[in-house]
Image (cartoon, rainbow, N blue to C red; front, side):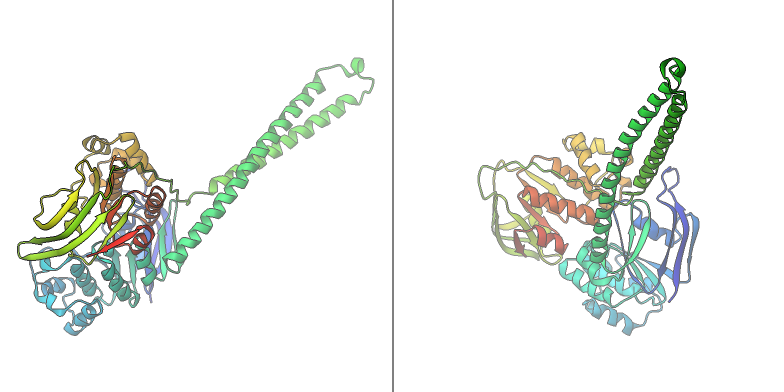
Length: 495
């Protein structure tokens, strides 16, 4: 066992006035299986790069272990997989590699195939196996689930459960629960470490948030009461002061002690007013300490057009092939109004091809596809590489209301400063949110979302789930987040 110590870490990107991290200190045990969570754009990948020494920073990071980053950059993807592995771990033992691949349910024959012929899931598993051959290293595993189907995620989570010494960035709730024993969370104002899995951390966070909200409401009432009382006391004090000096006690009052009495009353009222003012300031100061780490998740709204007939779409015995490669065959299902259909299956089973066919792409196929002639579809693609320019131009290009578009992004935790940046500078999760916000702005009869949650943080996932459950739009989606599928789908089509 050894420790990674982070002391007084402060970092901002060159040219930026905003610190990503400010005076952060904490300690990590290198035997921990550490889940790393936080909202998109908070700096998770940035922190991993700081551990790797990629950026200059102030403060101190001390570690007696080497760091290795996943995913490993493969410079020549046409090389055989065994050669790619040798670049990651040049002194590996063949029997150890075979053991790791077997644990990940990958056949040894992939070693002698070009790396670029492997599926995304196979590539993920091969790189994880190679990295865990570095037994003296602490692994930084960044979003390994994005190219894994549900079965692949279960295999990898079982694999990681029996390992130790890593930080795992993931937003898949079930996946994190299966394989971590500590959670490192980037909050609004600090970084915290808590023992347990993701679910226990999330429950504790909700309790802390509820407590802060309750305390905040109590303090708001206390401040309001003190303000009212202080105002009354100040008015009484001023009135007493006027009475003290505004008349001749010998002419008006027979009692010569009246002036002294009025003075004492005035002094007491002034003192009481000052005490109330101090209590008010203390209450306001206490209130300002609350809600700093409260994650707001405003309710999203959706207004879907109603189509005049049902079903909206029908597929009968659809088969798709690319050359001699049969992707899927004899697929039949219908999309009725109000359906929330999960299109499920292993990687490569044809899910994205079916979606693209429905959306109107020219894909060679056999069978019958029936679709309403006036049906309007709002599509969210897997790919975000085509996104560029600023948000205003993006909204104009796609003919969506800019104010509504940006309001949705604000609810999805976009800071206003993000509106001044180009989309290319956004994190992976922020880019996906741009596509989802666009889709929510579009007037459509049917939502078709292809892996919409890749890179998106958990709190935003819950927001999107709440939206779909409340407004019940007609939607066809592909998603490998098991919790999302179980919560949302009214039907499942298994390819």
